[in-house]
Image 1 (cartoon, helix red, strand yellow):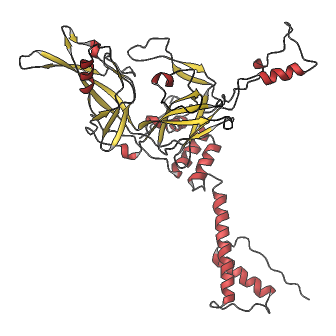
Image 2 (cartoon, helix red, strand yellow; image 1 turned 60 degrees about the vertical axis):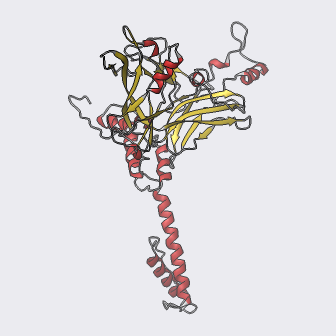
Image 3 (spheres, helix red, strand yellow; image 1 turned 180 degrees about the vertical axis):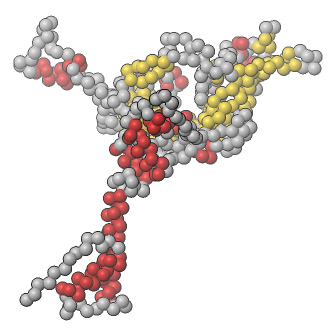
Length: 447
């Protein structure tokens, strides 16, 4: 008896090819049992149903395979996974940025404005207009001619009455503002939850930046932490590019600023976290996983019979040879995390000039003793943006992320070639906005 053979075509992945292969298979191996090949027959309906299922399975397999590689990826979740694999962190929503003139009226003295009533406005004063909300970036010190960035930004104008007498002074400070609103998110960490690399997902999907993170002992805290607590070095957790980054660049409070310009220094910190933006725009914070408690190791060494003794007859200090906090310290149990962050921005925050005119949420400090005059100065506060707000942008597209992954991986987190500098420019943190145009050139082997 002649043995029949058929060659399976593994390249047949579409409906038409699979149906033709099925018909050929039945005609070869079951010529007597299956002769129902009419397009309107139930038998052909079964064949076409199998061909349809095979077509769907082939499509799903090809699609999943393509999602494993940068060239073929199309889904946001997949491209974010690949970005993480290649060490690139896609930015989140970015805010528009502008400048605003903050105007106040202050009392007069024989020598000019009464400096005791020149207030200091803390960062976070809200500026509204065109259905958008902005906040001031720096502290606004009306007694200084300079901003915190060291830029001369103060003008003083005398206001005269009908007799040409100076009745008050109008002081204008030109400051930076960014789209978005500051919020505070609270997370309680119980004993069972205090695991290494504790993660927190913020409730907003348009997070712009993390302002401050502090951890207070105890649970059930109902109050909002004070400004002082959010700036307490012993309570703060610091953001790094990654958990192994153990040095953070901070302002040096021991050195006086010069024309508003402050010096900085690298500080080694163990309380740290890293953030990443997920494919849906959610911001995730991951805290450290180490512990500063070496007692368990000390007890283990004490239990050894042939332990090596130091010259002073004490057990070798394991803290000098073990680095438990290389990835930061974990969140202590029975504590509460307070995360101050900013949310908002996006393309809708790009607004025109002279539209941001409402001011609120003023937190000020003043040396004046007359309460009525202090209140009069604060109530005279008014604002206006002389230039448009630009730079607001939504989440990057899949194609943008694919391009950024390639350039970021090639640069290896360095800044040597022109391409490296361009890649670094597009990695600018979202809190500074988005780069509109990047240009560079090489002359005499220098970028």
